Length: 365
Image 1 (cartoon, rainbow, N blue to C red):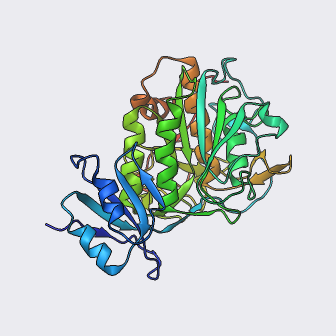
Image 2 (tube, rainbow, N blue to C red; image 1 turned 90 degrees about the vertical axis):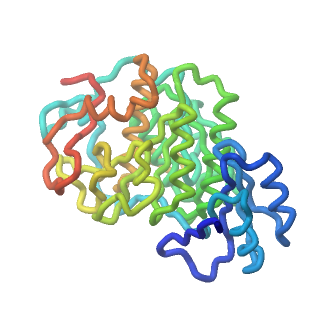
């Protein structure tokens, strides 16, 4: 039986690049043998999460691969974007330890461990590693989109700031690792994002992160089996994965990796504890976090206000690093633990079949 060809909704019909995923029982030489049969070089090979590669294929090469007994499935490469929206005016981090709905005391109460001993990978547009807010805890480790090892967009720097900067961060002592998957326009291809996810598994094993590994991916694409398989594998390896619900005001189950059940999927709220008007919802969402008018670090040493589920998700990634540094928690149970700590039924405007859980850090005020 031929392997399935998956074409994500919205994929460009003119694109001839494909992701080829081999079966789990395929021989180790299967990828090299398949790549040797195509005219172009592979853009990426995958060997840590699963065996496979991405490359430009002719119609004949595609047909041959679909009929290769070692191939599990083939997916057309599509474009992913960071999930941020408009900028407005800021509100503070202090919502997380505060149990009173809609209140903000202006104080962020947290344990001084603050994520020490953890490492957080930010797969995004890069991080401005020399920003003073990061206090030397940030490294640029790999680039899967261009030749500029810097953040030319700002999206990744903003996310990293929410996770672990000294002023805006939830886990103020976590180490931050930048893996670049987006260009200056905040766009990247699924093939490169898969390569980045594959890289993280290999790289994290070489780092000194005794308290655990957290991965933040603030991207969204119409459902991609390849992205979901990679997300699932990251969690199975033992890393916490926080992902966006998306910014389309619709059911998150239509998008990847938000519809992967093993990832921790995050929706966004506004300062008055209402669901953000743009935030996706539905059974795929695990928790909600602040995502409107979020002030955080920006490129060129700056500070900026942004909104989006991209801004909500790093609150959960930071909270995961914070809790791993503080408690002995199995990573596989961490998303449920975060949900169990959350304020229940305080968010207004939550649709049916959607959790009403607003994250807290356990330091109630």
